[in-house]
Image 1 (tube, rainbow, N blue to C red):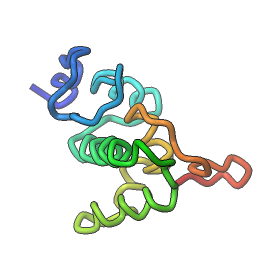
Image 2 (tube, helix red, strand yellow; image 1 turned 60 degrees about the vertical axis):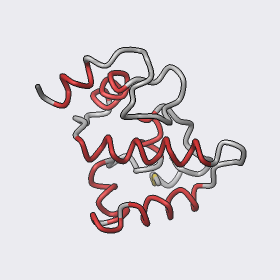
Image 3 (cartoon, helix red, strand yellow; image 1 turned 180 degrees about the horizontal axis):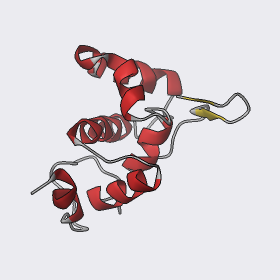
Image 4 (spheres, one colour; image 1 turned 90 degrees about the vertical axis):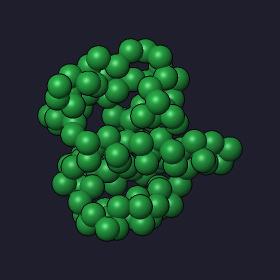
Length: 119
């Protein structure tokens, strides 16, 4: 069974692989969102989505800061190429696009359409 088949088979109940997922989010929904954005989710993507969801869960009582989440991702994925690797996985920005796919609200400043940049 492929990863996408596994994702598509995930029901609406809380998926144990994503213990910090927001209410209503499912891996199947993430796969559909990613597909609309031209991405095919692989295990590397899912690992990043879990990291984003965990970060948001740990910081639920405070405002999520773009710089801090960017730095946290760099640290967590340092051994795999850090934030540069994440930009290859999420060309729309590991924070901006990653948050959309993870069912999270991206922090202020994650996307600046005026300059065409994304975080």
